[in-house]
Length: 276
View 1 (cartoon, rainbow, N blue to C red):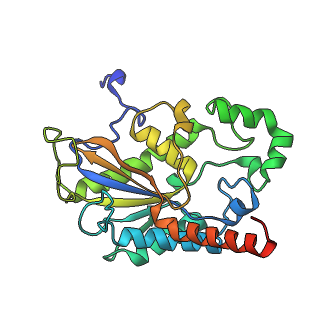
View 2 (view 1 turned 180 degrees about the vertical axis):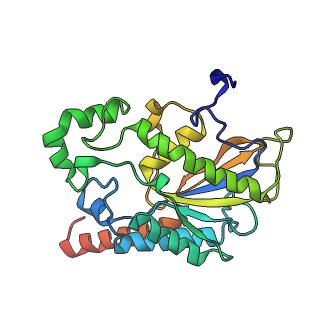
C-alpha cells in the first residue's frame, strides 16, 4: 500500500519544471470604465475606455519591436502564446497585442487569471466602501490575509486557482523548449544576445499578478502589497534553469505619448484660464 505521507498535494508539487529556460511577459490591461469612475472592479466586466484602448495599442507596439532601444529582455522569435484573463478589459488588451506582434500567436483565455473577486464591493465607488465597510477595507490594506470583500475571494482561494493555471503555462513553455542549467553566468550586462528560449505573454490584472508573483517566487501571501503594476505596464520574468528572475518590472515608457498629450492639454487649459 502506498504511504499517504508520500503523497504530494497540488500546493506542495513543484511549480516550475526542472531546468526550465523560458520568459513570461506580464502585461496589465488598459484603463477601464470603472477605473475612470473610481469604482472597485474585481470580476465586474467593464470595457476599456478610449484611453485604455490607446494604452493597449502602445503596449502592443512596444512588444512588436522588443529589441528597439532601450531593449526589453525578451527572447528572439515569436511568442508561444498569449494567455489572458477572460474579462473584457484583458481580452481586448490581449487581442491588440496579438494583432501587433509577429507570427500567428494563439490567444488562450484562462479563468485562473481572473481578477480577485471583490464580492459586494464590485461596482461600488471607493467612497461608498470607505463609508460602509471602512474597517474591513482598512484591514485588507494592512493585513490582506485577515480580511477581504464580503462575498469576495480570500487570498488563499485566489492562490489555489492561480497555481494550476501558472503551472500549465510553465508546462507548455517546458514542452516548447529544452532544459537549461544554473551552471552558467547569472549576471547580465556583458553584451549577451537576446535569449533564444520560448516565451509567452500573460495579460491579466494587478491583484492576480500580485498573487501570481508571490506564488512563482514562493513568498507568503502576507506580502501581497509588495507588488504594484500600472495600467498596460510591461514586466518580464525570466526562468533560468528552473529559477525565476525578475528582468524587467512595471515598464511604462511606451505610454509616454499619452503623458505628453496630457501635459499639453493641461498647459493649454492654463493658458485659456490666464493662470500662471
